[in-house]
Structures are given as structure tokens and as C-alpha cells.
Amino acid sequence: MSVLSIRQKSNVRHFIYCLVNGTLDFELIEQKFDGQYYEVLKIEPELFYKTACVFINQETAQNFDWPNVKRLGKFICSLYKHDKALSTFESWETNYVATYPGYFSDFKLFTEWFIKTEVVEGISYEHYISDGASFIEQCFAIWTNVVEFKDNKVSNSEFARERVIQYIKSYYVEEFIDDLEDWELELHMK
Image 1 (tube, helix red, strand yellow):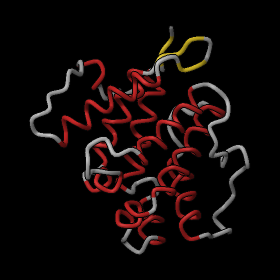
Image 2 (tube, rainbow, N blue to C red):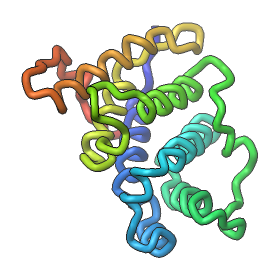
Image 3 (cartoon, helix red, strand yellow):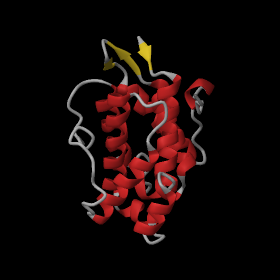
């Protein structure tokens, strides 16, 4: 079995944090979203999903040491404003489909699951965004820490999601106590 590298784990958590708090390209995002970034992100989960897909496609194809956050900021703005002048992205970057077994496809599937699944009744993606970047960063960090690979395919995607479910329940349900271990919660820095 193999696991994600510290660099990969770090890149995912930093990207997610910047995506949620609006700092992929702060000035551009403030300008294009007219100061309404969080409100728009809450009601348009497609912006979250598609930007996450572009990130993971770039991450796996170009193996960046650090996410190209300015470019990703430009992407989310072009997607939101349907601005072709900002859209200088290749078709491989804007592939939103989880097609091939492996890390990048499972990341897309996990992101889609995260957006669409109501783990706690009455609590959904909109609440996650409202609760901020640190909460969502922790969810994705747990997933990256737990996910394992065998023959370049994710071998424990259900288990990785189950660990995230434990965290979400412990965050929103006062009497719920998770059994997460320290290594699962670690926020890696490269």
C-alpha cells in the first residue's frame, strides 16, 4: 500500500483553504465577485467543484511544488463571470469527470460527495462554507491522510470518507464523539 506524499497532502489542504477563504487571487476575486465571494460560493457549489477539478488536474499533470493559486483564482472568476478573456485553460485542465481510477479521479469523487452529501440532517455544503476554511480544510486533510493506493488505484475510498463523516458528526453533533487518531487529523506542511 502507498499513501499520498507530504507535499500532496499539503497542497490539497492549502488549496482548499485558499479556495474557501477567497485568497486564490484575493484582489481579482474581490473585484469579480463584488465582495460577495462567500455568499456566491455557498449557493453555487459548481464553482467549488470545478475549481477543485482544475486544481487536481494541474496537480497530477504538472506535479507543482505549490498550487498555482493565482491561476486557480483566475479560473474561478472566469467561471463565475463567464469571462472568456480570463479563460486561458487547456481542455485537460477543465476535465471535470472522474474517468480513470486513481488519486485525481477519487479526489473529484470525494469533492462531489462532500458537496452533495448531508452527513448530519439539516447540515449541508452551504453550512460547511459558512463555518469557514478551517473546517473544510480539516475534512480534506483527513481524506488525504487516510486514503491509500494499491496498483495506482485508491483502495479505501469508503473508509476515507467514513473518517471524514466521523469528523463532520463530531463538529455538528454535540454528543457525538469521534474516534479519529492524531495522524488522521494532521495538517501537513511541506
